[in-house]
Length: 243
Image (tube, rainbow, N blue to C red; front, top):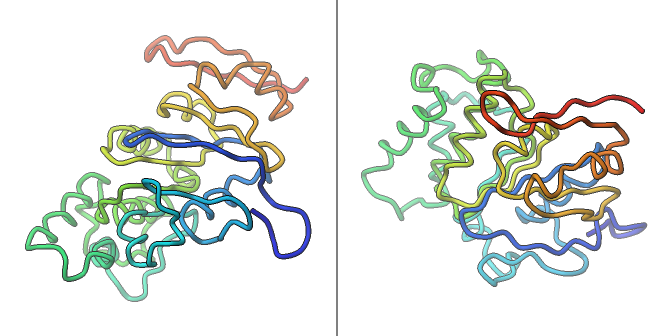
């Protein structure tokens, strides 16, 4: 994928994501993570190749059909537009207008509770912290009940506890999840597979243990890494240093 003129932003990328899988995309700044996600959620149309959902090119779907099946959570915070937290979460039902039932209100309440927002339902989003607003946007996406949930750095504005809670929740969802992360420890602990991008190209794809090795991290991020096991969780623990 690339601009109308000039070099492509991302290229030589070919991968599939299994239903129910959580795929983490990692890479240094400028590697092309957000550009790849924009192709996946039909914001940018590839100039070569295709993005397929259950075999269908997503650009062959109507915008509404795509919105019903693919939900996104971007880095931008929620805009209030004079709406309450609950009303913003309810916007996730919009692609299903006239196609859902009386359970819609229950689904909004469930999403608010899952994200720890039930006590904030009546609040103006402008009064919330950045982390709280990010959780509002994730709750809105969950209400959509998508086949594919795409998140661009969803933990950026969250404190440590909410980072762990959000990624634990995402890893247990029945939907397919593609998420870009800058924290390799979080990617390793929660993702089924990790896709590594560098200079707009896919350089590695596999399980966290296979992909996030000291040699691979040195090549991709230009840092040394010591990896051991967390004494409580047993998950890989990363310690970085300049070389």
